[in-house]
Structures are given as structure tokens and as C-alpha cells.
Image (cartoon, rainbow, N blue to C red; front, side, top):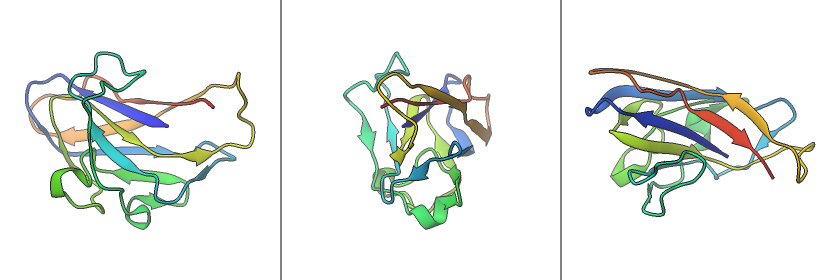
Length: 134
């Protein structure tokens, strides 16, 4: 699963955080959460291949029950793996993690909206979308 965010402001958005909830009936795969920068991406359906991904994020710090609140840059280039807010640079970035959904099969796609909040110059142009498919 990926939650994509896009910052088209030309400036870093400070104190940004990504929030969402796991869909009903799903469970997080422990240790699977990771933030990635994908500056070469032009399509949020797939990464660019030149991504910079950080260390796995501390699940206990960013997940509470089925709710995620995390920095879009946690664990990247030495940043804290427990951060719930941080910098969102210009371009595409994403949060990725694995989960199990007992009802997913080869034809099921489930979309859920995530939110992205931050302060500073401008605003992100997209709130990000979670798409779950087998």
C-alpha cells in the first residue's frame, strides 16, 4: 500500500504529517512502514525507480490502533524513525506499508483517502490516496 503526496509549491512544507486509518477488517504487517522520496515520478500509480527510501519506521510511534500519523520523511537520511511530522520536499513522496485484508482477491481494489497537513509556503496539491489491491 502506498499513500502518495505531491508538493508543487517549489518550497519545503514544514511540519507536514500524513494521517489515515486502516480500512475495517485489515491489519498492519509489523515493521513494514517506510517513507520514500520519488522525485522522478510523474504517475502516482508507480514509483520512479530512483526512489530514496528511509529506514523502517517505528510502528509503536506512528500507529495507534488502526490509525497512522507520520512524517512524510521519517527515517530518510538519518531523520527520526519515530517522527509524526517533518519536512515535505518539492515533488512526489510516499509512505508505504503492508497490510492484510481478508476480503482482497485478484479483482478487488479499495480506495481510501489520507490527509496531508503542513505549514510554511504554499500547500500540497494533493491529499494523497491509498489504493489497496492484491
